Length: 253
Image (tube, rainbow, N blue to C red; front, top):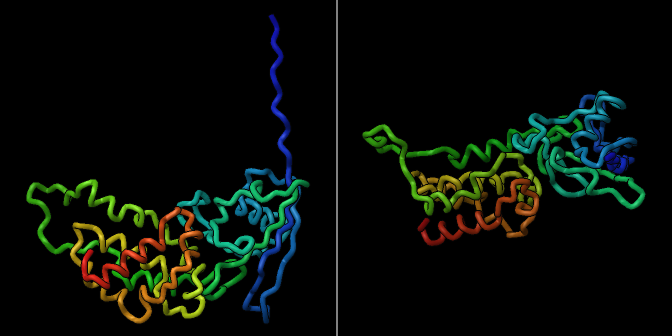
């Protein structure tokens, strides 16, 4: 008995028209748009793949930041078609039209100084991050038996969502309050503080609440939800900020 193998249908290749916000402070007086066209792009290629192809085959001067390319490091957060996303997690096939064409507009994330093309200065972002004491504080002696400080599943669940942050800055740089005043500590820093404020083993929650109660702390949040929509880890950022506000108001965690 003979059988005939069923051939898989051919993969429909895409044409990608991409506009990239370019700026080299060493020679450019102002940013400008670079336009590029790529053919033979696969639907499962990411925006990061497309940017690589532009850099490797059309314009080697393009500057971008990336590391793991798997949505873990957070270094390739960009403004893609008007919204903050990780370039490595955004598949071009999901944006194709009926003619198998994709139009992309890629810019650096907003609110931070552009160093070159798609690379921004992350130091102000990390300065805010460091300001909220994003580390475990417990001065009591560890358990005598040498084991770790135990915690119930219920206590862990209290802050589990905010442990997912990868510090990509997508939330903070999507926030109009941060655009208006870069002194605002920003959603990412508040998320990092939340992770420790509600950890039942930590002893510095009062200090963090005092820091976030200051002029450029949580009260700069206007509950617009841009941060929650931008988070590639699907953290409920606005909810976390609201919980911190409530704890400041009540003095309870």
